[in-house]
Length: 365
Image (cartoon, rainbow, N blue to C red; front, side, top):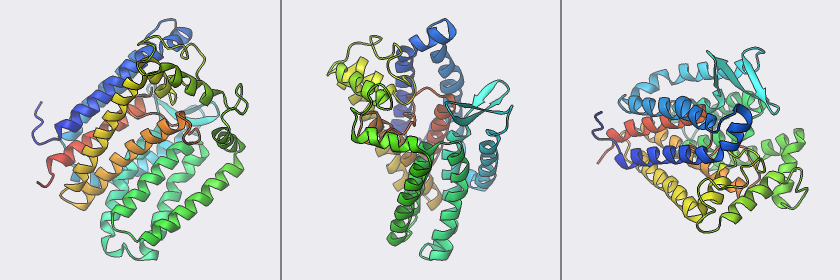
């Protein structure tokens, strides 16, 4: 396969992160796989067949496409994805888990539309911002329509509820808005509105306040609302410098909730120690550096904003997951990109990286 002109460092980093995720899942999921399906590698095989394999194929396919073509279809993609976000609430088509309606089933395969909206919204917003270069300093023609767009995206995510995904989308959108040359004063207005919105969401759903209280006091109710974060910190702490050894996690034996989901960073630290976590963090750092470099050398505003958006989305999400599971911020429930179990999330991330690689082929020297 020809890869002329693509950022090979980014490509190798993305593949390394994805393979790292499969390796960690192969160990972290064995107990859950056996308990739920009677054999040890159900989740690994599912992640490989319905996440890694199609994701890698789509990455190589997308990198061959001129990214500028996507601008023409960004609005259509957004409408389709918004419809999918609505379908999750239709009985018989959508289904929920642990009080959240986030999945639909198509041909026997579950799909999480909230994962796809992250990428699709980046494409749409980049095209929208590029068209409004002349109005970027105008309050009524830039900030107000921007807020309206955010509210349209927010409503179905709040109803699911999926506040973690919504926070990633809003953070990414604000960065793109800033990079497009909008006023600093607009950013302060958005930040103020965001804080007020967060307080409102906490007020209408007390469990979010419980997460905040656990963040302030990890010792609070260690067998209840504080259980996950305490077990996660125990896992990371017990790993030490070199880890307990691959496959030797104790917390995966039904002690740590979401051991293959948003808690997988803790299992990684327990088994591979500081060394394993350092390698993982280094890969994310390389990804950030290459992604923002591609953005800085993009030949047009659309390419720059898409590259900034995709890179920021993945890095923000990684930071929030790691910060939450190490008790630096309240628990968010969002997965670790490339590493956590979830086919929709992995496929979407790899498609996004394919677009980044496409932009890199047209970079200015």
